[in-house]
Length: 126
Length: 108
Image 1 (cartoon, helix red, strand yellow):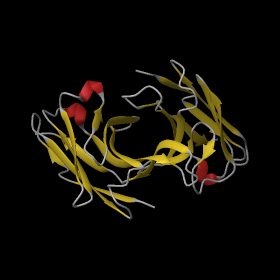
Image 2 (tube, helix red, strand yellow):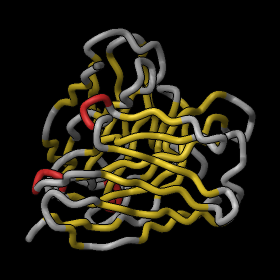
Image 3 (cartoon, chains in turn orange, yellow):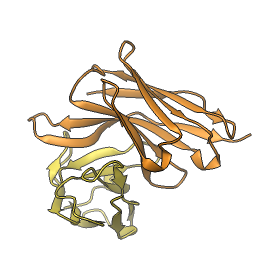
């Protein structure tokens, strides 16, 4: 079972850049059966997919955030990271990193978020 | 973008009762639907993937059904630990992956 842990500042000033890192343990980030994703949850609201990355570096982003988001992977440290520029109060949220497992134990197509970090609250405020 | 609409927004039931949660997609997503459970202060937990497959370690009282645009999560007999918020999520038409707005299953 994979374990994921987010780290980074809990407070970011408006117009600055939010940077978070997710450390993966219990497995290799190079495992071809996973994508690595960021999801956020604004206070009292639902879940919002931000973007995904494959171990090779290929990315996909939510169109509405694409101009401000960069997700990168560091295979040597088994980590992947999120950068969100020009933040506003609307970016205040709990940010989760997660794994998108492509297959279940039987090799059947799964394509779901099967392991999650505990989440980290990022507040945008001056 | 595929919009997922969950109903009801809140469901009030007692332990032992049967819970039926609905998720409707704005366009066909085949069976590319997952369900998650989230308790306060915790990350979501994967319950069901590919519309009807239970994830590892999920009790048999949880079942999923549906295809196309209409999906259902059923909890056959509610246990006290089942009271939580439930989200559906699609991966058919992506990016983006999208989630429903959630159903709050509360104790009556």
